[in-house]
Length: 311
Image 1 (cartoon, rainbow, N blue to C red):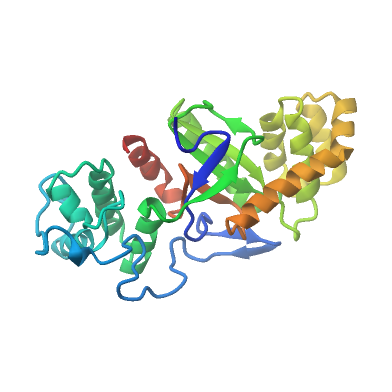
Image 2 (image 1 turned 90 degrees about the vertical axis):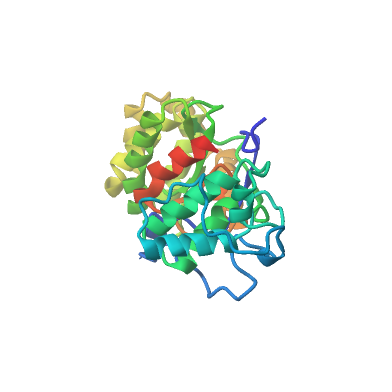
């Protein structure tokens, strides 16, 4: 059984995913994705709990034949080798990634994690950013749980890779991400799915009514039909516009109105927001992929998903 089942989803979190920009209670942020919250202290590197110098091989490994680093410049290759010798195996062993790969240890994530380091170095991330991204993806200690048992899913329910999104229907960055995520599902047909969690921000006056409307639409198995329309018309949202879109989505309006006014609908939105707050969500959109906070921005999403499918 996959660890990110649609009942309880184990997640690892180190910072937030913001597509390079995010909505935060009506304000927009453009903080660089992957920017570390603080300088790492020696011996306290993200992704490298403990001291890898205590590994079975004390000497530095200079070459990893199983890892193609031919696209790197010589300075980049040296950076990669340094990092591979420094960060610990993603399977929790007290050995470095380099040792894990060189000794062909049983940890199936060692080679993928080394390849990930190569890509991050090639993509030009600074060392602090790179270590944070590596930790977000492979540190076994960063695990949380999000209940997605009632959340709508787009794509194959048992897809190999799951994306969980905390989103706000009035947030322009969520609106920009929505068609991109839809295209991703088409490209990875049957292999990737999207789980939607409500996170309407207080600064967006129509976000909460839209969230309740989407929950009411889900009661008629038309969540995604209405969600697509809400994002398409997010600049025009108002109570009347939301109701117009509900009609366009083909909803039974008598049931829709009843569900919209139901306390259970508001409780559902509140639960989603509580779930988000519990894992540190502060802005939207925030994404998690297979139990890991995704932090690379839209430009790295396809690469990340292809790598994830190989894990």
